[in-house]
Image (cartoon, rainbow, N blue to C red; front, side, top):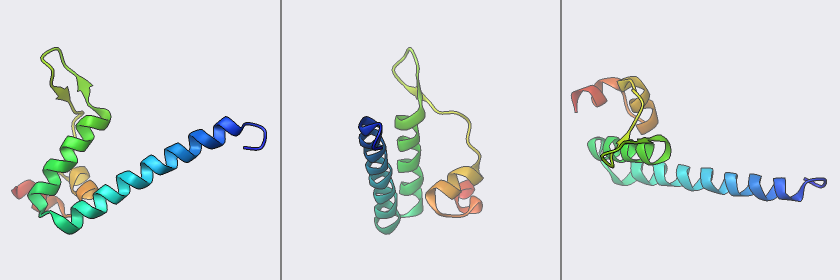
Amino acid sequence: MEREPRLGIVLARYLVRQCLGLQDRIESMAVHKTPERVMLALLQLAADSGAPMPDGYLRVASLTHHTIAEFVGTSREIVTSR
């Protein structure tokens, strides 16, 4: 960072974005029940990595129930039953 000060700024911004994202996830776990957390997680994933479609929707890559459960902080069985 001493040689490339701009790199330090970029890294700091990245760290702040990651911390804010984690803060949102922790707050979601404390405030919302599992169905709402799953919905919010899918919306977040769509906003972060969704591919825009011609009709204006965002297409999210295939996710297993296990992956969604890990992201939300619950079990696969709970995600599957909702």
